Amino acid sequence: MESIKIKLDKIYDFVSKNDVFSYKNEISKHILAIENKTGKGNDFLGWLDLPSSISETEISKIEKTAALLKSKVEILVVIGIGGSYLGSKAVIEALSNSFEALNSNRKNPLVVFAGQNISEDYTHELIDLLDTKSYGIVVISKSGTTTEPAIAFRILKNHIEKKYGKEEAKQRIVAVTDAKRGALKQVANNEGYTTFDIADDIGGRYSVLTAVGLLPIAVAGFNIRKLIDGAKHIEKNSGNNVAFEENICAVYAAARNALYEKGKTNEILVNYVPKLHFVAEWWKQLYGESEGKENKGIFPASVDFTSDLHSMGQYIQEGLRNIFETVISIKEPNSNVAVPTDSANIDGLNFIAGKRIDEVNKMAELGTMIAHVDGGVPNIRIELPKLNEYYIGQTLYFFEKACAISGYILDVNPFDQPGVEAYKKNMFALLGKPGFEKETEEIRKRI
Ligand code: PA5
Image 1 (cartoon, rainbow, N blue to C red):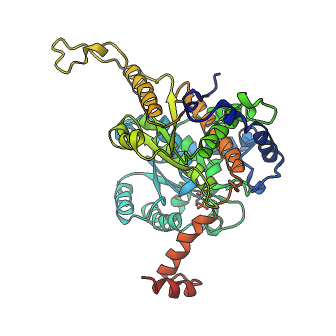
Image 2: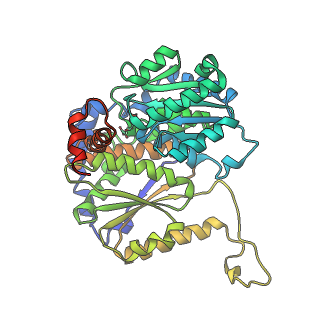
Image 3: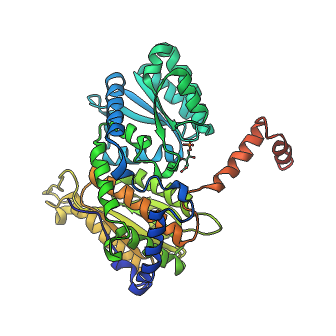
């Protein structure tokens, strides 16, 4: 099997090969610190050997639970936020038919999400849908106390129990949470739901290869073993025994930090296939939460090309020159559509007649890269041979490992997210949560 590849030739007008390679020794030390668990946040490294260590028992339990849910439901509602939903959303979107939601002959349940926002209209519209469809719930929260999913679960638990009765509802709800702590664990124990444990040493945004990601992905009909195999391939090829040049995680971490050092403080993840939109959302969470702290960090943004070339393309070409792009390119599409010949040729497109759409897309990609480099925007390119479980598995692990290395280069703890608490404190104070009386008094003076 092939490997995803990284190409740096379009950054060398901005940084030298020496700049990138100057990280070699430092990165070797960081990889050792990750492997030996001696660096910052070392109690959150459970994801590191997950691809090679996930047990057959766990995989089978996920597959069996997915099969049971598939036999019962038309719609699976995954309740979770942040790392508890973005991984499965990313993989399902990347691998699904773009119009799956409209396919009435679907073989697998449609996976929808809740608890990733607090929009009343979203919740109402979801309930309207669930009134008319057979459904089940996978509720995911490592802490078991996060407000957004807790609200969604309270509402949908109530709904599903009314719809099916308490006993049947229990068969349709699965909880993924901490092995011992948290309100969700307590409810799951009280009700007797099927549960999956999230290990203490795996943080939300590094949890896609646990039941957090794998269960919804399996329900959506995808082969989780191939996903894990892909991740395993990168795990094997990104250790300290692998030469820097051969280690794509090390090379990516070095390249983006070399660019950051030169003032390229914003990284835009670019795709040319809209199915990768949520891979970028997952990536933004991974890098934003891992690196953005202590007044440091590359700001992660994303665009979908060529759509966004007609909007954000202007800024990228000519705006503030503090950005670089990382382009994810899919070498070979899964289908084949060519541009037809038209004898009238009123649109003037006969010069591309007979060409596959993908050839046009690839020329758009190449042309844009050259234009952006000319405009002062360095480009890193990551190529996936195909869009399938195996290469998406490689991509997920690649970004996780590179993120840990990159966080260590920045000298931050890439596994915590202390800044996320600030909004929660204010929200609880404004809502008058018991225990927040002092904060409530203080914040009310400011509004
Ligand atoms: O990466 C993280 O740790 C966070 O984004 C969490 O995944 C998110 O806050 C949800 O937390 P929980 O799973 O505890 O509900």
